[in-house]
Length: 629
Image 1 (cartoon, helix red, strand yellow):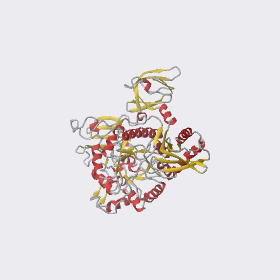
Image 2 (cartoon, helix red, strand yellow):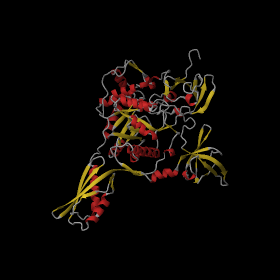
Image 3 (cartoon, helix red, strand yellow):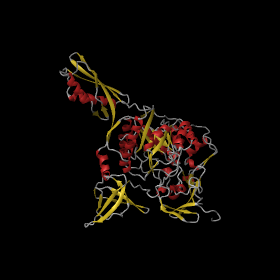
Image 4 (cartoon, one colour):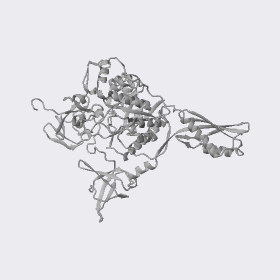
């Protein structure tokens, strides 16, 4: 049997618990520091509490230690890792080899996962990280199913892959644009999201081809319908992006993907199973089109190019609901807008509610407004709304959906089967309950009475009704009463409920029988994993990682861009190509060569390069040659 994992993001403890309740098999979260989202740190005490909660279901907590480190931070990072390991963390997500060296030096036998920041996108990359001791590889997002399958067949570590959320236009871990512009490194968790900024695209003659567009901004990833393909290709962990996202976003997306994963498992004929335990009951009906997104794409998963850009809407628009049919100015100063629903959307499906948020696109700007009174297909605002007749309109906040999530939360419980038996012991009649949780724990409890049930069938029904309830995180199924004899004790409902609670307490005292995952393998002390000069793209920013690379065969190691600021650095490399996006690709679209292209932003100029052999685009800082050309 192959175990599949839904891996959810968490900015904090509250969101982490909600993700588990909504069906996540694992959660990734930052500790106090050194996570690739600088503003999403958490105290060790919160990580410990989250681990305790997750481990009740056999779910896991992975802590991000995936920034590059400077020498002055090595000791602090090592101390933090020790504290997080003691708190119960199940794995560290790592970019810097210094972290792997620290784990070895400090005897932390905790699995290490190679972060997506490692830009693993070839078999050669994967084999190197396998040899470096990583038990899981988080692959680059700009990959095809065929490449994923090729890597899976070549290496033994677990394979993790993003399936939903924001996309970096650059290969992860090799984007230096933020550092170049503001001195804030994406590899240090301080990205300014320069890919969401607006640029002009100009040719070599200075002609403006695009004006004030978020040219480097991509749509959001959505592979909800491709989970089966990914599982067949060898992916075992399906990762949702979003450690900066709010509670509503994480609940909604996790629930939708958890339901899809359950459906995949049901259809697999026993081939697949979830990697944690507990059934999610009740809860809202998820709708990911009603949560933050920039439009969705499946990117390069089929090995084909498409229209991936969100250059018009880099901030997210929400759910497109229709067009503005009319605008009326009311006597009290308010404005009433009437909508025509989007084609295929029935009017009743809009469910507009007071307080809904809306957005429209005006040129290159996204303009938002709140509907104070919403009824049917009309929106009334207390003041003027930035809308015109004929505008397309999106809803970026659905009050009714938010209320549904709050009022109908998901409840996750481990199912427990119970067998009842009875016997006569002297002057007492004893009821014995044997409980088995879905993860295989067993608990026993007994209760006795001096009275024998006068109506055994009625007593059986009472026992079934009282035991077949919930206690804590356990959902007790109606018990098996086949072993009950004629010596059934007469018990009040309170005594039977006490028996059920006793079983729950005993199960709680036993650790969940979690599904094994790949264990720790230490960073090797010597080897030939590197040769010649190690590029700056390995992001070596400290002496510990440099020493590790040199011990593994490197003749020399270039400094990370954050240290060198080298003039010739590729600030980005990507499968995304502006020329293809605009129908200007000479290879795939038969267009004539456009000549050099540049991005302009606030006086800065960047050269676009086109590596057609690899079908990749690069971004470099523009620098004039000595001749001034």
